[in-house]
Length: 222
Ligand code: BG6
Ligand code: MG
Image 1 (cartoon, protein in one colour):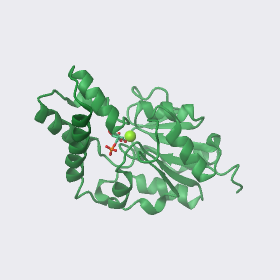
Image 2 (cartoon, protein in one colour):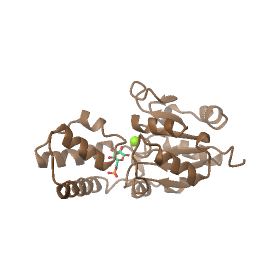
Image 3 (tube, protein in one colour):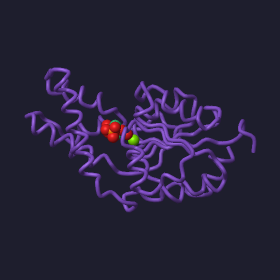
């Protein structure tokens, strides 16, 4: 298969490969409590796919609070330390259902496989859940300057795979991620709620709904 026809498959991490939203929630909530701010589960929903810096900006905005840049940086570090302690014991049991089967199908068919994540913790998380070897390319929050919905993360992934963006598909759980994929000229598959991910080309509740025949016929054999 020539590279111009080869399929690139780009996976978001949080909420697609591993359920980290619950750990991000606890870490932000502990931080908010320590500062006397409010932070609810509904607020957490709005932070899916959103960078760490932007998340804190939003929490401050919701709480009508302003802080000094030095305090902002300290709180970001504190949040991440809380998050890292929550995921310290993460293991392969935290892979979301059927992720490994889906990765294996694409691997067996020699597709280019990339990670396109906003997280700066993506590499250690992939290591902990033992999925790193599936990925030809990893682009994460340490590599990009513009957050989703900007397409930078996915365009970088396609570029590093050496595959035209039009021949790439993206799996995403966040609205901003779906928008980023569409702006990159890629097909976007949503993982989650179809009522939320209205801009996706197709939405699956999770990977158990994506069977091998669909992958072969509609994704690889498109
Ligand atoms: C995204 C998550 O993937 O990564 C967000 O959906 C998170 O909730 C963002 O804030 C940044 O993650 P990290 O690990 O760099 O704080
Ligand atoms: Mg996500």
